[in-house]
Length: 196
Image (cartoon, rainbow, N blue to C red; front, top):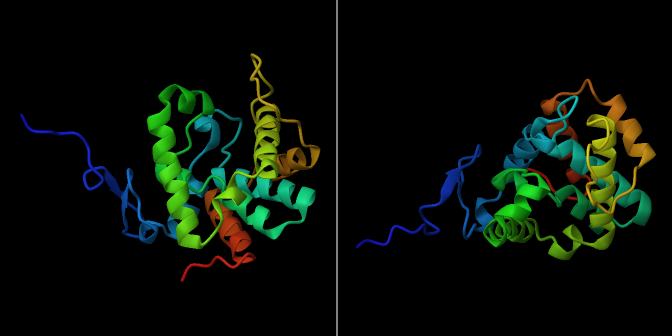
């Protein structure tokens, strides 16, 4: 009987920039800044169940803004901009679904995060620092309350509503995915990451 289990060579996808991205063992050379910007700007949070499209790129910019306001730390701010970069390759799944899928999904997502950090020479710890995690949770609660009209059940998330981010969300409804692509690229360029 032949072994038909997936291998790193058989479980891959082609990216916009024509890289062969292997899900199980991605190489740093398959990571591309424009692929990430496209993926994040064209992927909607909450599977699109919001009153308007909310891209992962817009979310990442909001998290980065909170992290900068709280820490004034450039490394953590860049970490916040890149904290969901893996989702450009493995998609943004709702947290309850990620939990349901378990260790296999976490392994694939972690491999994407590690490859991205290696490619950009960024410390993975900056993407998962407590300041970044708290800002991510605060963004989640704020997005839920502004763009989903609040919870229908308790979410059990240790986040707090952020008034400044809420104002941003309300003011940015007219911007499309291309706007967020450029805004995200412009912001990461401030920290030395450019398409080269």
